[in-house]
Length: 102
Image 1 (cartoon, helix red, strand yellow):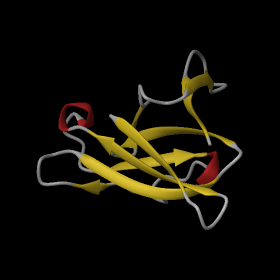
Image 2 (image 1 turned 90 degrees about the horizontal axis):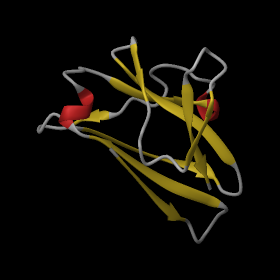
Image 3 (image 1 turned 180 degrees about the vertical axis):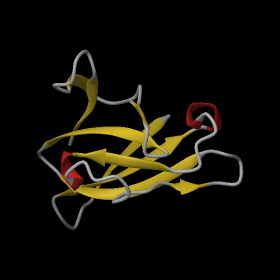
């Protein structure tokens, strides 16, 4: 998995590019990025399936904030990105959410 951050010069925002490899997708047909920036809504930010079995997606978020997020595969399997800036308790047992610091 990877996360690339690019600060935008014309507004206080950051472009984020996410990638999940074929191995990490583990046969998923659909992966969404869900987080506090989209009210944890599955399908709001659905990743694009690539021919090689990986998934990618880009979005812009306001700079100067922190955002919690996770990936959701096929609406049933949650997983984190190892390249998140840090992790925080999700409030559900031992689960953790990835944290983006922009």
